[in-house]
Amino acid sequence: MATKKLKSTEYLKSLVKTEPAPEEKHRIALLQGNQAVAYGAMDAGVNFFAGYPITPSTEIAEILSEELPKRGGVYVQMEDEIASICAITGASLTGAKALTATSGPGFSLMQEGIGYAKITETPCVVVNVQRMGPSTGMPTSPAQGDIMQAKWGSHGDSPAIVLYPDSVRESYELTIRAVNLSEKYRTCVILLLDEVIGHMREAVTLPDLANVRVISRIKPTVPPHWYKHYDENQKYLSPLASYGEGYRFHVTGLTHDSHGFPTNKPSEAHEMMERLRKKITHNIRDLVQIESREMEDAKIAIFAAGIMSRAAKQAVAQARAEGIPVGILRPLTIWPFPDDAVRKMLRNVDTVIVPELNQGQLIHEIRRLTKDKSDGDLISMQRCDGALITPNEILRKIKEVH
Image 1 (tube, rainbow, N blue to C red):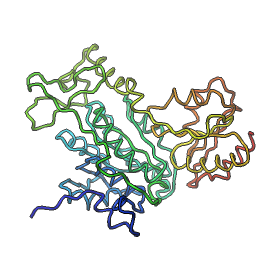
Image 2: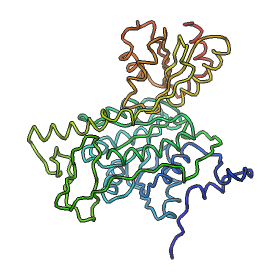
Image 3: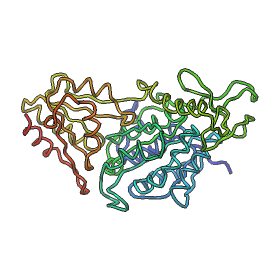
Image 4: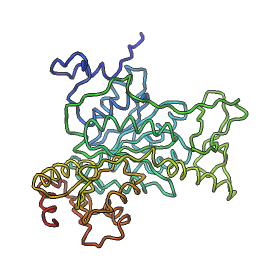
């Protein structure tokens, strides 16, 4: 018996508690961040999920296990996270839009598989809902300790695209963006969430699906005997054939030539590595997103990501009400790091405060970009005990340096 395929907005109808205005019907819902990720994935066209349940990301798997089959998709609970990253890579090579979700310990296990997805230039998305670590740590407590791992976790040079929302609405939007970027640039894209974002609930007005831009991979238009699986072009956007479509290509984790076959030739190895790098560096404008608030006349700047930007925004609003010239910068794209935008926006400020839930990761990037400032002009606020830095704590720090 055929199963009726549903749009996620139809499912959201059951979550609407009050009758919305006619033009907003079926679009407003009280959502958890992890729910928003699941619905965003489906609205982006994800039709394959493989994963292993792990706090605090499990709700993503739970929702997709129920909803994907209704849409003709596939959900597979794997034996572990190593199998999960391998499964979504394999599914993507057959033409699926594939995603998995995990947290810190599982993310660590996935690193070699993430590197494999990057070297084979296979689109997929990994969602990491961060928790307190290292090791098992504090599974239900927030932390931001995986920021550097998201960039450097896989061995070798493997440039990363990593997105970082600070709200439930952005969890939905950036999931779609992560899927789109993975398909466009043929790589593994990582979506970082904080435990608090994954589990908090907010009223969200979702866009009409007609207004949601969904990108699918470029398909080859040449005859099979002309096809190169790793073709070169100026924008580093190359067609991707799927297994079963009549195109012959080889996939390996070894350094390979344009057809995918292993090579030891320095020239071909250089060509492959440059393609992996330049698909990121030559498309910075398309990849980088950054939010700026109250920075026009700011003498103090807060640089914060994820849940810490929520606290920072509240502190900035309170400080502005008291006449203190402070603003905030927030990266929606954490990697590649928004070097040019940050350097430009921090040029005229006297002090930069960086609150983060780790022992100091983002502060190193800010220090790299503001070498003209002394250590006293860069204020690090760090916490890694399972609790949040509050708006009042950030406000006190603002007043100390004002």
